[in-house]
Structures are given as C-alpha cells and as structure tokens.
Length: 133
Image (cartoon, rainbow, N blue to C red; front, side, top):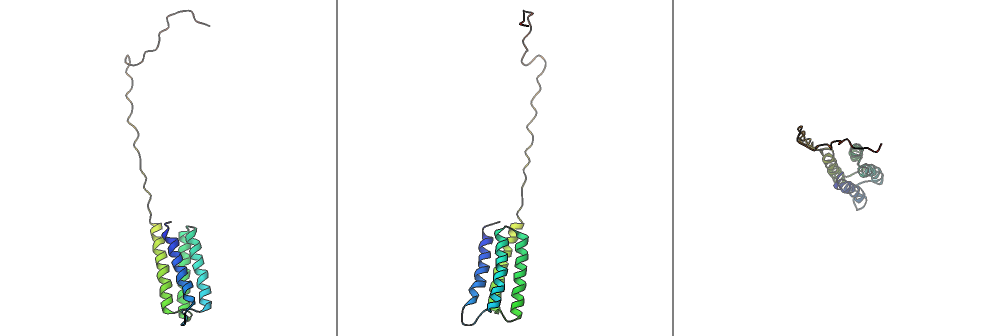
C-alpha cells in the first residue's frame, strides 16, 4: 500500500478530532466518541494493509456521519470535512487495488549444434598394453 493512504487516514482523524472545540460545537461529545471509534477502525485497517477492511470501515464511518448529521449531533460543515477526508482515503485504496503485475517470459536459449561424427574430440584408443588389473 502506498504511504499516502496512512497519511490520509490521519487526515480523517484530524478532521474528527479537530471538531471537538470552538464556540459553536460542530459535533456533540457523543458524536466525537462514536466517530473516533470509526476512524480508529479505518486507521487500523489501512495500517494492516487490509483494503477490504478499510473499505468496510470507511462505509461504517460514512453511515455514522449521515446518522449523526440527521440527529443534529454533527454540523453540516464538519460532516462535509469528514466525508471529504474519507473520500480521499477511499481514492487511495482504489489505487492500491488497481495495481497490476507484469510477468516476463524469457525464451529458452537456442539449441547447441550437435557434434558431427568425425568432427569433435576423439577418445583415446586402447593400444593393447598391459593394464593394472
């Protein structure tokens, strides 16, 4: 997996955790707790290079954002930030799953020419001498 995916998973964390302060609360404490758990699941899957698990965790994060937004526990702006960060992580996961493998086949070497009779190395002839056996 490319190094960008863990970085982008961190962007999601920052988008969620950065939402906890300010005068007009962009999310409730309950929402922050729920989203932290979802983001942790995304980060864990990305760090484990589990593309399918990261995809499922991103889907769960998106569903939680939609639900919390419907409950008015999450502002429109914060929801948009989190969903944009989740989309960026998802885009990186897509590039990881579309990598291809190239196989190269090397042709066999050409056959060596056969030695013709009478042309090649001659074996020593036995001269009929006394052997040692």
